[in-house]
Length: 334
Image (cartoon, rainbow, N blue to C red):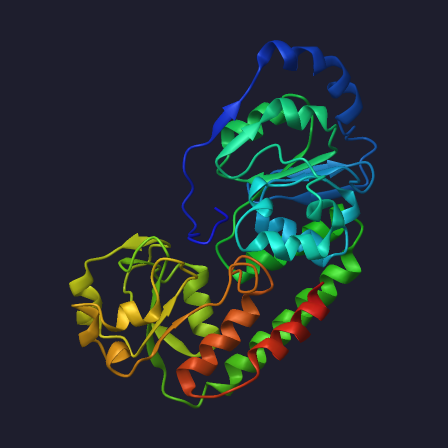
């Protein structure tokens, strides 16, 4: 999912498949796009555990995951992108992508789908040598692979998964040196922030997704990692990645700080004055904060490190120039 209310639960995938039209492409696509295993010189294993083999680095890539696309741009491999997810043209991320690529600024890159809709016909017409989708889009993947087009399937549960994704993209796009450099940079930054909090008593935190004040994440999630790196204890005692809880349960947990995903309909002051949540320590101390933007703090990219620094500083009363720090980070990553 790639939106301002993003959490990692995916709806069913609906496919726009025009079988009579697709049939016309079968012969050509099979011969043109099928990677001959005997000639393959590039191999990676995707998040399904499936080996993806290419005879040469991919140079016609369709990426229908916004966070993965962001990683490709970090590798300075955007020249190989021929198809993008539709959400790069709307919402808060649109301006960011427009600044990275004139083709996106002018609406020139086609968007044959997103996390909830895939047009197989449009994908075939773009003659890709690699398609990147969520691993949960099983029906779409199966239909694309029918035409012997390699599909790299993604599933992000942790920052280690992000590191793997970047390394694999580096291999597939002939950008491995840069990928390794960016991953090392991120590891070092997160380690440094984490080490600074080891001697301090952990602040207890609650994370709130944009879907509602009772939408949160448990221990097995990128949110939990965000908290761990920032020196915060997640009050949610479930292992679930995304769950809904009773508001009264949040009061029972009584967090010291509440962190909100970017939300246009609910502000921190609304949480502070909420009939139930106003009784939490976080509300009483006005320790309720909203992450500033989906693109800048994406928990499924190396940009998680910016979110970690923000949350850490909010929790422990430290200050820094947010805009200046973000600008420096973006210069390194992009």
